[in-house]
Amino acid sequence: METNTSDYESQLQIVEESLATTENEEERIALNSLKADLLELIELTNQTNAAELSNSADGCNFNEELERFRSEMALLENVESNVHEVTEENIDEHLNKLRVKLEDMVGKKCTAPHQHTWGSVSYHNAIVCGIEDIANMDSNGQLKARLRVLFTNPTHREMLPCSFYLEGECRFDDTQCHFSHGELIDAEKLGEYAEPDFTRLARNCVVLAKLPDRLWYRGRVLCANFVEQLCRVRLDKKGDKRERDFPFEDLLPIFHDDDLSSGSSSNESCDELEESEDSDEIKSARQAKLVEKSLFEFKPTQPLGEWEKYTRGIGSKIMAKMGYVHGTGLGSDGNGIVIPVTAQILPQGYSLDRCMELREAANGDKDYFSIEKKLQQQKKKQENINAKAYERELQRTDVFSFINDNILSGGSEIKKAKKNISLSNETTKSLNVASVRLADDIRRKEREIAKIRQSMARNSVGSDVYKRTQQQLQIKTQELKDLQREETVLSKEQASRKTKDKLSVF
Image 1 (cartoon, rainbow, N blue to C red):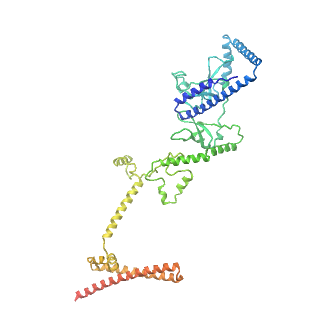
Image 2: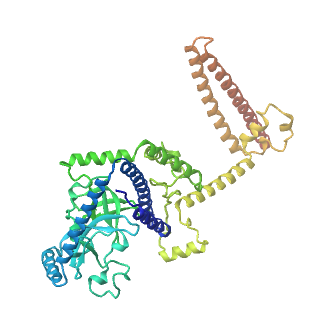
Image 3: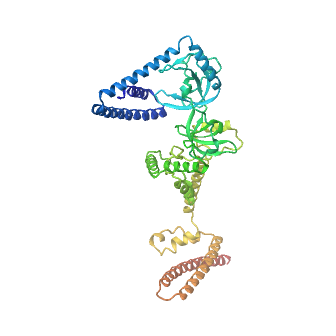
């Protein structure tokens, strides 16, 4: 018998119209999936119709058609007889009997179907809140009563119960109110309610979590605390706070393997799910995305982890092992902070208002109280002080600089031209101090030369160590000669001054 595809095509048109008007990302994903299913169903139906036409053309005869016609006529006669049985006189009696049978279901929990705006039907937890007063006749002539249910775990706004309707104060009817006044469902379409089993909560298990907007969102468990009855969940929806802590009463676990006999199998399924999610392909794609993102990120002047140049950098190594890509923000998606948080030191004895006034006086500089900025200022100030001290030291002329420039320079003509600087300008006290220092330096050089000669005696002549030691001996010997020459000059200057003192007495 040929199947008509017009119903599927009308549903496909409704889905396409919903896609054009819906902006919610979750609904768009569900609509696209439903659209693909409808297209596949239409294609299969057309293929089935074509096959049936070919088979009927080959094997169907007049007797089979006549038998089919007689069976359909008998079915229509049964329907007409049932319709005549339920007349207007006894319809109220049948309705009262149905209401008596269904009164016990009012207030009980169940699972009820809900048809979304894009045509998809799914079952959700609900509670029966009443029975419809109007009788409903099905196609077979059977009298049915429908139940009004309210969803206890609404995932979309049209499922959310109206708070004013529950209190009996809503001014709108079912069609005008943005929220739900309950849905009318046939009694035979309701399912049994299953109590949530929180003992099976484990990592990566799927749950529905209730947010402050009274809607329930899909997420996955990160960890569960059975002592405090808390659970940390990572929501699938995009937002600033995807990871949150929920009490057990705001969670609804969703298990697709209700026939499991032990908790070990549950853990194995969670582990398999974790392995499938963290496959090599997903990891490589995520890594490539983060690396590409790091190329377009703003590069701060102070990179994250700059202080580790003074250490072994164990923190950065651990972060790299965990998948962190340098140049991106913190977090699994690289959307966290890139610029490190700096410590702030407020001036002692000032109120917060005064500190804010000081910051505003500095043109609102956010780093005005930063300890790193203060350390940089102190470092710069110390560098300026050292530079000025070095310049003063260069301009200063003492006995040693005079000896190095005029005596140890080898008698160059340029140094000899500086006749204005001589030992005669130095005081007797400074000459005595220079003489003592020279004597100490000479003794030190002599000890070093003695150690070098002992080292040469321990090594064979012609070896590499012997040659290097010999070069050191030559250098130290030349330095000793220079010091002895300085001592000779100082001794002459001191002797000449003593002679002048004796002559001045006479």
